[in-house]
Length: 175
View 1 (cartoon, rainbow, N blue to C red):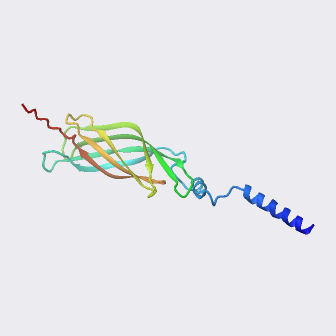
View 2: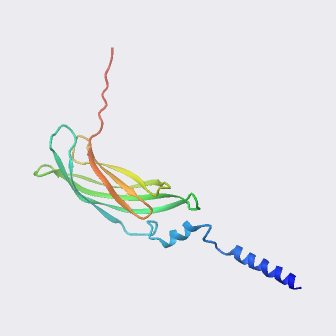
View 3: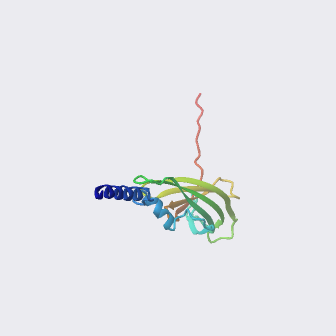
């Protein structure tokens, strides 16, 4: 009788332990809820765009001032959060608003503006880079302001910015 009671107690204990939500087999899901990740609802955060950039082209020592901001809302989307190969993506809503003008002059004022939604998979290294191009309004040469963002599971940072002219394609007609 003691042996039957012991076996029954072991079976009940095994059943109880087996039915519990085990965070050992799913540690990422447990940390996603506890960490201040980008997946929580947050208001738009601004990143300042204040710089003096070299103007590309044939002009020597020509610079452009950039003043404004880009607002973002980032959301981490779990694609497959089960370890050991957890996979996530980021959805980044961007809203740009900036003015550009020739440095140290009272020349023309140009602008960038616009909203977009960008997606990117976050690799196992935990960092993804996203480059966003904004065409500069008011210029007739097609110049763009390029912004490169560094995105992790917990932050969005402006990594670099530069001005770029569109590449010209030269076509020759042979007789």
